[in-house]
Length: 146
Image 1 (cartoon, rainbow, N blue to C red):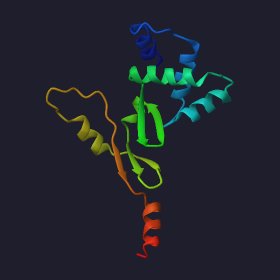
Image 2 (cartoon, one colour; image 1 turned 180 degrees about the vertical axis):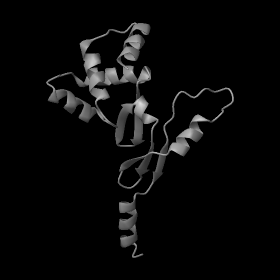
Image 3 (cartoon, one colour; image 1 turned 30 degrees about the vertical axis):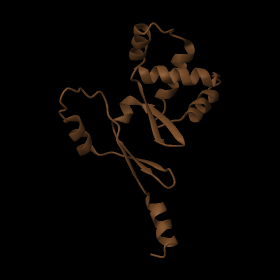
Image 4 (tube, rainbow, N blue to C red; image 1 turned 90 degrees about the horizontal axis):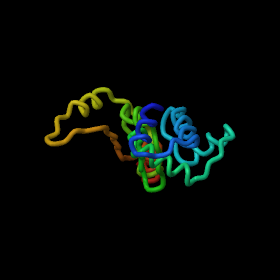
């Protein structure tokens, strides 16, 4: 993936800075979703200090390069994940509490990958299913006396 990043930077005539590579390597160590706060925290743990502007700019570059996916899962939260991981699962999002659960579904993934779409070539996909989690549903039933 580092080589893909380098090729993208070269193609777009962007600088190959130590900060960009350090941020990308840190992102590659996440096993799932991450947000700006957790990324900055992980970098700080290794005594690598960068400004929020550098983080946001690097995330934009990585997103434009197709290496990460930006998820706006609800109004309050923007999360990111490596594109290679994003296609392995779908997202179940509770509309009450905002909880996000990942679910693997190999049949659904196969069906999506086999879609033939006229005059369109899919590059990647992300699936979000919005609903109410079991905890919130239980609370609602208790509140309504059911």
